Length: 617
Image (cartoon, rainbow, N blue to C red; front, side):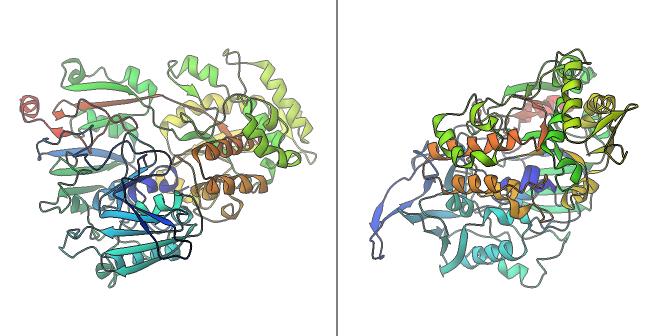
């Protein structure tokens, strides 16, 4: 699966979602039905706004932060293109620094949109269309005005050439039309749903005048023309990108931008080895480090700069809905099509022993496709969930209607024989038997299983799982590949089990079609890593997309979660409920943290001149 499908496209090309509200104004439309039209600077997908039009800046920024200085950040992997729209090429996750969008989200909310390029949006009661009015001062870095035709051009690029995962977000957006240079109208296939409105609200414009002489369907390392706070100053292909702050950035004083983008220069250095990357941080070649290894967090920070305070370690509770981290089955392979086989393999995953021996007791077991959020199933099904699932009773595992889903637990000894017996029983029911220490089918062929990963941390923590699989007679192994190979393997579905983290974008919506929908199962580059083709899943996704209230959406999404969980399409692992990070002590940052992005680096940090001077000494 591509990096975009796991971590990026929502932020780079679709923006961040959050919760806010219409700020005013009603008028009568010219439609025969005379629908009430809302015109507003900001809106919420559900509920009321947290901030109104008197907001001068976000509460989690310093509007008087000094501008200047250089920060160096590391990135894992490489890049060979600056085109994030198409399936070809590997683009850097930092590419979003180049682009503004019609509206942006708040770090304190999960589904809200505030004007950036757009000064307002208007839409009727049934939300069948939306018209955005563009800021008259909005400019690209070459000084050319941003106009409605640029958004029409961008929409057509996504629909015709966009990578499958990105296109899936726009499934319910029918058309884009330039009413005049300052107004763009989108028409939606849905009614009474703000989800597609939220999707287009976070669209970033491609400058049509710049792309007319270039091929949008090809990869390119030519720095693209952008509209955001930063432009690309220099490139070392595959190795480094230097971004510089745009001095005459037109939107610097907008309420949604004030106090952000405070570094004059941001340099991204790329590493193909995590150990080398961390050593670069220890040596002062990288200024900020986000820690993903619990072992390293507890044992890897005994170097002098930490001991004398030049490097600061910090941890903060993180309420952000998390990605589901798992071993993903490839259902396109016949040996994984029997749910009993998938369930048996789940019995061989020993989280409790990992927690005791390697995870320092710091992680929570994943028990939902939507962890750390309100959208996942909890406890036994509610009456609302039962009402949704009952029409499919003969097509879903019976437990989905009656039981709380809990992943198989072990005694934490590292050799739980009870779970091994359960796994062997399930394999036998599925036509596999243990003979002379080998799990074989009727033809005498041993069950083989290879896990693919691009992470040294996964490689370290998967060893026990592999050993348990071998104890059950499987010919099991794990293979580490580089990030570029990992992406190709995922896009082409060439694996048995694959380690990955699958983000969702609360509240869930049309992207679920790409994650779990049958139409995406055979589509290379889609986010349906597992190859799920399940008509019940398809039907539940459509109920989620059509939900007219947050309560309806939550009930339908929890019902979907139960169907996915009880089909054992993956082996769920774990997640931390804290963010761990370290940095060289030269920064200032706000005292107030955003609820859903509590670290805030690099967007709300700045160089503190006194700290920087002390550090340099």
